[in-house]
Image 1 (tube, rainbow, N blue to C red):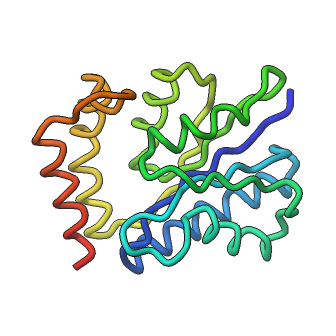
Image 2 (image 1 turned 60 degrees about the vertical axis):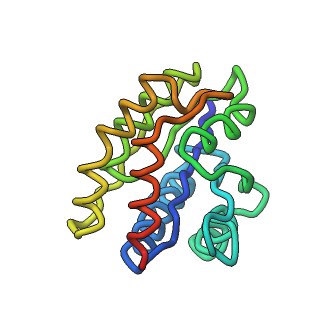
Image 3 (image 1 turned 180 degrees about the vertical axis):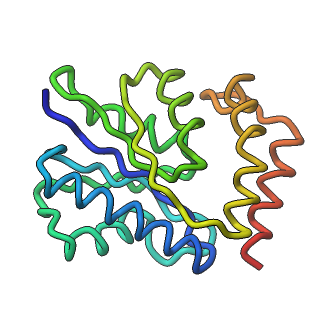
Amino acid sequence: MKKTLILLGIQLSDEDAVKEMEQRCREAAKLYRGGIVQKIVACGGRVGDESVSEADAMKALLLPLGVGEDALFLETASKTTMENLMNAKPSISKETEALIVTSDYHAARVSLIARRIGMPASVHAVKTTLSLRKIKKLALEPLFMLDILLGNEDSGASRPRWTRVIMKMLRQEKE
């Protein structure tokens, strides 16, 4: 069965985030060049004060790594992981399996979201180096997962105050 790789973006808020995006792109290119996947959907819009979309930033990294432009599709509208997967879902046909590439600390939540939206997929976790950023992300992941389980990321849902506080904390992380 053919596989489509869904490459999740990351807000480029600091040098650690840039390195993490590079790691994800190297892994995606390796899977493409190895014939594991035939198509890559790079996901991520412009978040905050980013000058380009996350998908465009990944394209710039993937092309020199040997990914053919005809195999690359850009999803530039999403700003959250839920939106990444919802917007990429139409790219997965009945004859195709989805392989989602993300960071190790993010894999459990991505798997949960894929199941929640009815996307049959496997998750390929890229091992990231330990940093203060990763420690913060590891501490917040259970809260993000709870948010998903409570349905606060579903279409039309109103997110609770504690979710907005967490998101504000993350935005301040880059200062």
